Length: 121
Picture 1: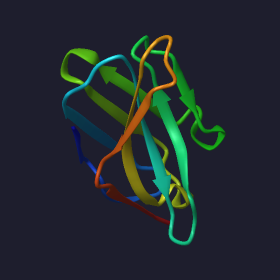
Picture 2: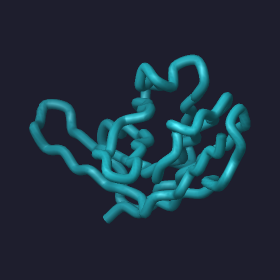
Picture 3: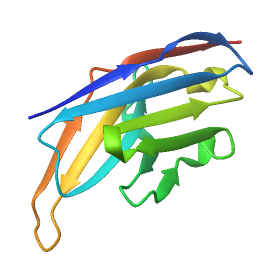
């Protein structure tokens, strides 16, 4: 089993910054991708940013240039620095971890409990 613990959400005014952190623990192995998803009220959960163990990064178009994802492989931690926040960034942010194995179709996904980010206008 893998556990993900998030921290760093909160209330901020538009234009402000927040930093989210997620620490993973448990049986972690293989190719590990970590990332952040956002779920706004009445909407589906969508990818915000992701980073592989080789530090390849992917961002949603809406956050490019404003958000930065980083990773500490030694600590199995991932961070999301969010700058120039907008009201549309509001939602519950979930940390995600995916494990895969080279040469196999095996895949396992884990989710954190979510942390609320609210950006006021």
